[in-house]
Length: 169
Length: 317
Image (cartoon, rainbow over all chains, first blue to last red; front, side):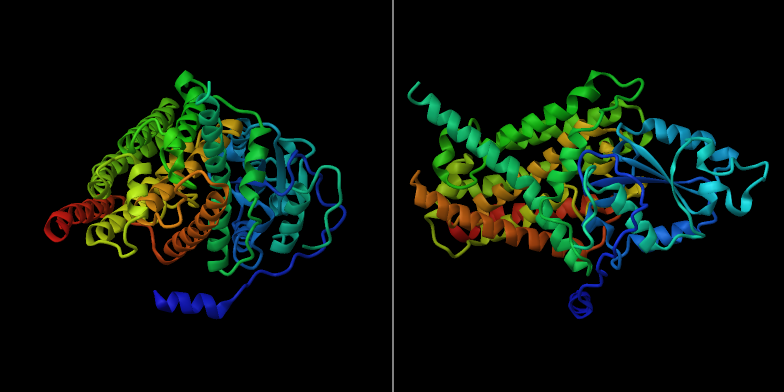
């Protein structure tokens, strides 16, 4: 117990300061800023994107300080975050998850696979990205996208509807 | 009419105070936990942000669920807010608004638990069922210990009204008696179990199989979810206020003087900040217990409560 407390005190704050977001981050859709609940669905991903999402929720990026958190039920979620090229088997599950979410809601495709099928594009077993199911989805390309890119996009999604993102806080 | 207006005023003030303290306390607890995991915390007002967002969202009623599911959140919220009248927050002056004693409070908490469990089971999802049943198990194990702790504190004051108990203990000696030390320890275990904190339940888990409290909320969305989460926060604050009234009543105001109340508010803030720090530290240092170890944990609470009860007769009479 004392070992843990000592370690906590010795380590100190690990969180990195926020970087400036790029202007082309996806548009906000919620009436309240800095509060975003995310439901993540793995639609046939190779788990590289999942590793980056895991890294995102660690102490270095601490998305909770911006009100961004992953939730355990689609009913609690505002944002459906999809990774993977959307295999035929996951298509129905993805639609069901989207149906279970309360309005206002949005979909975000993370990684090259979810954006356009990536290396799996053209396979008969995939739908070549989230666009085939939910047209006009916001996208974060990258194979896989780094936690910093993910964080800035998610911050963009949870900024005030009319207003620019503060450079850093 | 003469007595009704002050009564209404005190009641509304008490409910508003507890209702607003709840999200602030939750925010403080999250700050402590974030700092202890070496990360920059969210703002103190994050719960307000989350709940105002939820209140602006749509509320979905799952297919096949009955009115029970729709009415459980407002009923739970209303019951918890009403029961905040039963515990002293700032001073024992509030005894005019108390419509019952600590046993009534335990009863209301049981009613809330039954409503939540029924609302969860009503949807027919396996996880809701699982959570509801587990919650009832924790509840029935915690209840006898709660009642014993209340009795232990009540022997000393001769009344189960929390306001009178706090009043009697407040003017007593600062040195805690053995029965109150045992009772306080038992109450800490009860508080952790009743409010779904570690080591009984993990409030930040995403793993449905290990959930107790969260599993009951999986199907709620929008305003219903906001009411449920706000209600849970109020429940935590009510338990803390009960613990403060029974075991740390120093600093509670005696009469209605404004300066007394302000001083009592300062003490309350200090106590809640300390309580948040202790809870956050406990949650950081401990791991969640297996569900089959929960009965042992609650039995320990009951044992401590019995010891406190008996030690009054052995050591203090």
